Length: 222
Image (cartoon, rainbow, N blue to C red):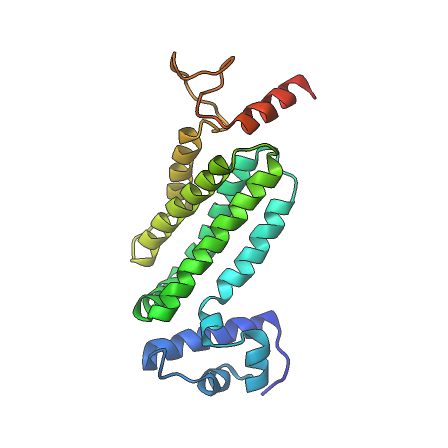
């Protein structure tokens, strides 16, 4: 038993916990059992996770940190950056779908975990919303929160298909996110404009004003 643990040990704790939850049930599994199965001390467990709920959502904590760091990098297109961030999260779970499915089954069984999942989903949505408002000064808050909510909802819908056993490549999510970009008139490849779909030039009416400004400044070199 050790008092400190490397990232590989953290992964071992999560894996051991999921195995025990599946075999014995979430409520019937103790922290002591998890620590013993993972080969770490009880104090190490609490330093790493805090509690059993934190083990279940450990990946999300890491992913939220990584997503925040990714969005903090320079991006030419903030809308596309949000979509790419969503795909990066999806790829993480798709890399080991069996573990993700087992964890999903546990969450569905426990009301407290389902509530925690709702809060976790909102944290992604809020992160996307805040990023867009910062990256696009003057963006209407309704456009920011609406786009963030749409990306998050589409991501969760596609991810749940994976969790329920279907083979779902990342390209499925990318196509769905392309539709979201087109609905907002901000797809990088542009959009065919209808006669009543314009404000000025070739910008669709539904495109947020802040995005029109960003593109005009980019085209004018300002």
